[in-house]
Amino acid sequence: MVLELYIDWISQPCRAVAMLLMDNNIEHQVHEVGIMKGETKSAAFKQVNPSGKIPAIVDDGFQLGESHTIMRYLCASRNLPDHYYPSDIKQRAKVDYWLDWHHTNLRHGSMRLIRANIFGPIRNFSQQTIDELRKEGDEVLKSSFSFMDEALSSSNYIAGGNQLSIADIALACEVTTLPIAGASCEDYPNVQAWLNRISTEVKSWHQANAVMDQFIASMKK
Image: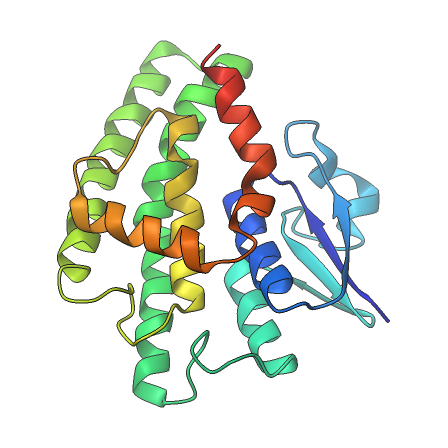
């Protein structure tokens, strides 16, 4: 059976999974689920992923959520090239480190700004709440980018190694979404160089980011 992928193209984790699938020619069927439309909370979608979050996959009846877990699963179940998720236990641990770090650092800061600048006005957050979210988001992103910039000063890839890993894809998708939240990595040259490198090496980069690019462009009008 064809793997089924449930995503919203604006979502950073969704695009990361889609890129891994497309770059490795894994046959799949896309089901678009709108976050802003509340479709992830529908009874129908919760039959796919009870947590009501995307991305999610159904692979021959096997249901799975959480983007990093899905990416690890795809690497193992489709026997993808070793550089994505290395078999060497120490190099794999480095990839896992950055995937885990991502949740409570880069993504944490990014989501605080998205909540403040995108969801805040839509959901009528108080100005105090918006200000607090912005302050936290700015502080976390500054710390996160400084840490990444230092790590990338001695390596072309976030987890080291000679080729990109799923950690590069996951983090790069987060960074490239930051203009939606009113942020960027322009003050961090090593992060910028790394992002340019990943955007060139991921063959499906522009295809997967097309909807998000259109959304960012519409915000500038």
